[in-house]
Image (cartoon, rainbow, N blue to C red; front, top):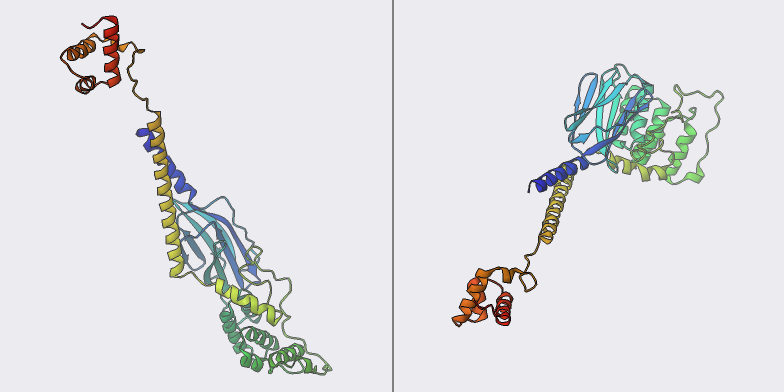
Length: 367
């Protein structure tokens, strides 16, 4: 019994260790100096808590093994300072320090389960370039409502910026807000380098793409105040399921991708916690049933190995050597008892009684 208890205890410990979630990877990527995205990838669904300070934030991962993966990040901007991970009992803790105060937006993604931390730089004064990058980041990651609000805020500071109007019009086209998109695109003057692309998009919205006439080339084209978004801006190399690869280039392809990213980037609600509870409960039930099956198998094997009692017979030598048993059997035979009655009275096998009677009659050992 003691050995069986030790085996069960060892199996419970191994099961608990085998079912613990592990941190697979931690990586960070800068979107210029406007946003830094930190991705924490785990081997399964976990409960977590995010705590934010002035220039730091911590992510507590409950019942998680920190693993051996080192955080991958680079200090390319003025947002991220350092990322580290540590084990605190049965929980893991990810610490992120920043160079300046930031605004945090957190969400989760599945398959595999990832915790997304978007660190936004806080602008003390309006910064057109960085605010435009932030709006484009929202559009790239499928957060179309946030992108719309960011463009509206940017247009409040720069109401006649043709680049902002054109990119805002493209975003509204993706959101299928036709009237708003046409209103923004029609504000772009013919002297702007964004006029022709805007007219093409207007024709596409109106369904008259073939009848569009390009504006005459201006004598002295006016260059935009800020160059368009660089083409070498790359998204997170592993979290490409999280967002589309670039700002929407065509109406058709972006409409197919943007809603999917937007749906994935929402924070988990009560349904996610119910899923975690059901998975954990089923895991423990299956573990308990498996342990019961193992105990049953051990008991069956132990019962088979037990030695069966040896029946007495004429070849065993017990009958002739047990004079007391022989005398009792023959005395009862002399009193007229039958073999079955003798076997029941003396509580010995019937065959043994018959064997004693035969031996005593054939050898003359009746007394």
